[in-house]
Image 1 (spheres, rainbow, N blue to C red):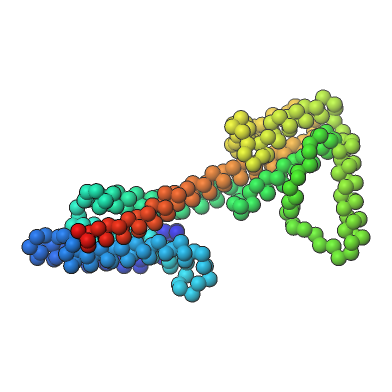
Image 2 (cartoon, rainbow, N blue to C red):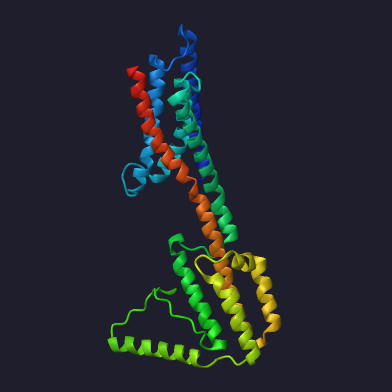
Length: 322
């Protein structure tokens, strides 16, 4: 959820609700002979209101499963989730008379604190990381498609290098993938067969003999650099040594700048393509890291929220029984 001017009404509404609840609590605490108690009528009222909000908070996960539901826009649900969640913490504190409690009650309060703090942390990440990703990742892609994009980049890099080195002796990728532009549709089987034959002819020609003539020493050097340093970086999970070599924008530029000084001019176009491919792979590393940061907090927030709801029910039953 992005915090912007659209949140003003929710912030004001939450503040007004908090002030009304505090006024009611102060009146109740002052007028009550025994002070504020969780088992009093007002204490149970605050508990009911707070628990009702918590139940609503947990329903958000179910609401996300039905984005086309007529029960309000998802943006409205998210705003209500954040602001009412903050209000529910105050309601639960008023239920307890602003006492932390012991045993199960104390555990519930600590869990609630962690849930609220993790939620605030998540909102902060949602406002920071997308902006940061825009700054760092110029070629952002759909997160789930990153492995496919990496395979495409690796295949394109193999082709570029083979124009200089001929066949690299690499095994073909077993998993098929669709290149940018999608799949071309053929209505005539003969046309499709002809296109496949032409493609195969280009591949065989590239693998049989170099299409860009350079000295044998330069050809061997490019092959060694590519197979030992560049191609290992173009994998789904590059090793630490590869990330150390090409994991930064300046590192990529410096690496290929060095290669251009030792390689003949005829290979510079291939090196420029490899540099662009490596830079795109580096940006995918950044995107994956930021995406994980953006969602990792949910692994604490969501399970704790549902566990908290179950323990609230246990707490209510034990309190009313004893």
